[in-house]
Each structure stands twice: as structure tokens, then as C-alpha cells.
Image (tube, rainbow, N blue to C red; front, side, top):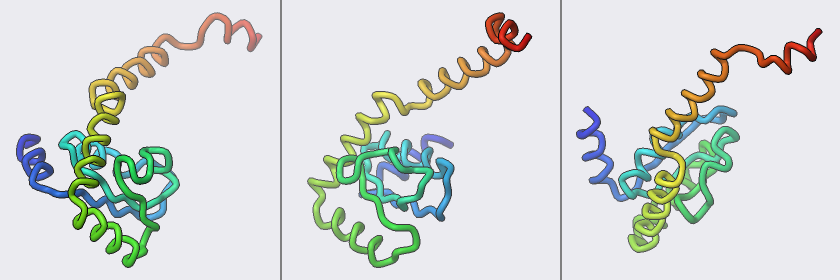
Length: 128
């Protein structure tokens, strides 16, 4: 259940999201859940995630597959709980400002509603 998942995130000091190179937004749900619980993230710097957050503000980026960079990032936040807490709080604000599931769901609903309406009169006129 979701309550157990939230309890697990709450126990974490930080959340690591290792990703393989991709151009899609894999891992974003995990990041949003971590931030919702006020936890900073360490994420593989893959194309699909660029722009999801600001380096050093809500979390840290590491090159995909770079074990030493991941280790350094973990140690950095582990040894600086004040900085880690600040990143987690910034991540929470990021989610509250536009990444929560309700806002995402409303956006998807709008896209589907627009698609269900079919082509607009203007677009039909342009075709013919």
C-alpha cells in the first residue's frame, strides 16, 4: 500500500535513482515520491531526466554507471545532513508547485479531453 511506501521513504536519509541512458522520463515517479517525503535524490544524469531538477538544489546528478561519482555523492549528502535536508525541502516545494499527481492527472485529463473533441474547425478548413 501507498502508506507503507511513504513510511519507507520517510525512513530514508536520501533516495538514489540509478538509471540507464534513456531519452524518456524514467524514474520521475520515484523522484517525486522522495521529494514528497522531503528527501533529496541522487539521480543518473540521463537525457530523459535533464531539467527535472536543479543540481545541488533538490538533489545531485551523477553520470550513469559511474560508481565512484555515485559513491562521492552519497558520502557528500550522508556527511552533510543539513544540506541533504535543505535539498529535500526544496524538492518538496518543487512537487507542491507543479509535480504532484493531481496536477499531472489534471494535465493528462485535459490532453485527453482535447483529443476527444477531434480536429478543430480551423484545422479542418486548412486541410481542404
